[in-house]
Image (tube, rainbow, N blue to C red; front, side, top):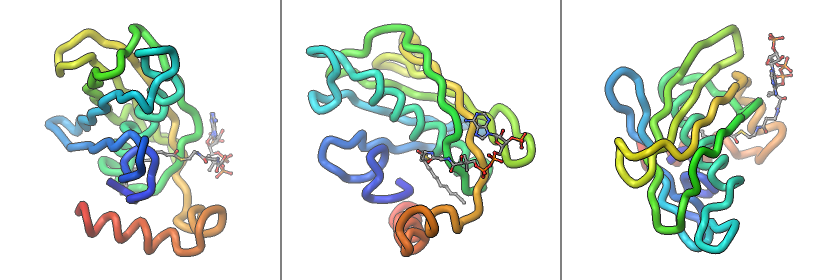
Amino acid sequence: MHYDRCFGCGELDGGLHMRSTMGEHALVHSRFTVTEAHQGAPGLAHGGLLACAFDEAIGSTVGNVLRRPSVTGKLETDFVRPVPVGSTLFITAKVDGVAGRKLYASAEGRLDTEDGPVAVRARALFVEVALEHFTTHGAPDALTKLKRAEQINP
Ligand SMILES: CCCCCCCCCCCCCCCC(=O)SCCNC(=O)CCNC(=O)[C@H](O)C(C)(C)COP(=O)(O)OP(=O)(O)OC[C@H]1O[C@@H](n2cnc3c(N)ncnc32)[C@H](O)[C@@H]1OP(=O)(O)O
């Protein structure tokens, strides 16, 4: 968790409640369980929330592997299979490359097991920013709040 009020990884009702763990070869593994709060069509996950799950999973990968503060500049998703309510996406993400401030990463999500069928793929460009990005454009005490989350979940 990088912030307890983050829609992706925080504790908010209806949020995605995602957690990420570092695996071998700098792969980062995340899970997203689809609940009734995440529906688009009846019984099926909303594509925008799936994109959010990948933003979180890839952002966590870029942040934890590279340890450089960054924000999503571009996120592209391929929705390959429907994702039903009650299913869990097993997401594996990796950093693909770095070009100056541009940080490239990608992920794929498999249905219900680590070797299940691929349901969603995503690629993203994160752009490295100064820490002032968060205090200037967001909350003045943003860094304190982010640091608090790091202490809960070092
Ligand atoms: C520290 C330790 C961490 C510890 C561990 C923490 C874990 C932490 C987990 C976080 C997990 C959260 C996951 C959710 C993350 C969000 O949701 S972030 C929120 C959504 N994103 C935003 O709000 C970003 C809004 N956009 C902006 O602020 C600005 O447009 C940006 C992205 C900072 C870029 O602006 P800028 O700084 O003026 O830079 P700029 O010169 O425009 O662009 C730099 C380069 O990127 C390229 N670029 C920028 N945007 C694009 C684009 N859309 N397409 C293509 N190229 C682009 C430019 O062309 C340029 O390329 P070069 O000319 O250098 O070749």
